[in-house]
Picture 1: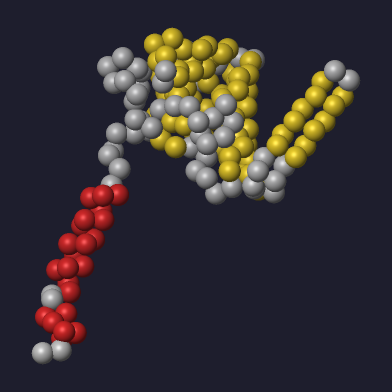
Picture 2: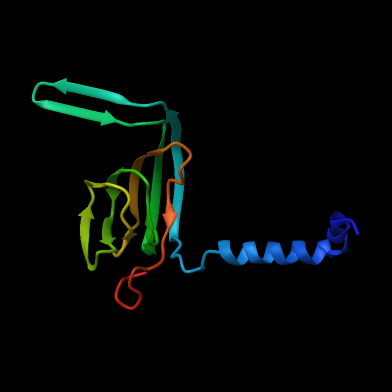
Amino acid sequence: MNPLTQFKKIPILPLLIALALGVGVLTTVPANATPPSGVTTVAIANGTFGELDIFTRTGDWKSRIDTKGASDLYVLQNTVIPGGTLGWHSHPGPSLVIVVSGTASFYRADDCTTPLVFQAPSQFVDNGNDVHLLRNEGNVNLVVVVVRLVPRGAAPRIDQPNPNPGICPQ
C-alpha cells in the first residue's frame, strides 16, 4: 500500500475544525479589560514621521527628540463626563496631556489609591509603558488635549485589566 494514500483516509473537515478551535483557545484574550465609559474622543490630526533626530536650543531652553524607526503622532481631544473614565490602559510611547477644563484624576497601577490631580489649566506627561487610569471625579466635563508619539503601526492605546480589583477604581 502506498504510504501517501493513508493520508486520504483522514477526515479533513473535523481536523480543520479542531485545529481552528485549538488556535482560538490559545489566542483568546480574557475579556477583563476596563474600557472607557462616558468619554467622547475627537481625532484632531495624526501623521507618520520617519526617524527623528531633532535638537533645538533657544537661549537656556533646549529640546531633543530622538527616535529609532518611524513614528505615528496622534493629536486628540477627550471629553469625559462627571464620573466617566478612560479605563485602565497603557501606551507604547509618551503622551503630552493638556487639561483644558475640569479636573483630571490620574491613577497609576503601582499606586492606585492616590491619584495625581490636575485641574485646568494644567498639563502633565505620561511617559508611556505604564498602566494607568484617568477619571473625572469632578462635577463638570473634563476636557483634555493629548499629543501622543508611538512606534509606527503600534496601537496608540492598549486596554488593560484593573490591576487590583476591589482596591483600584474602575
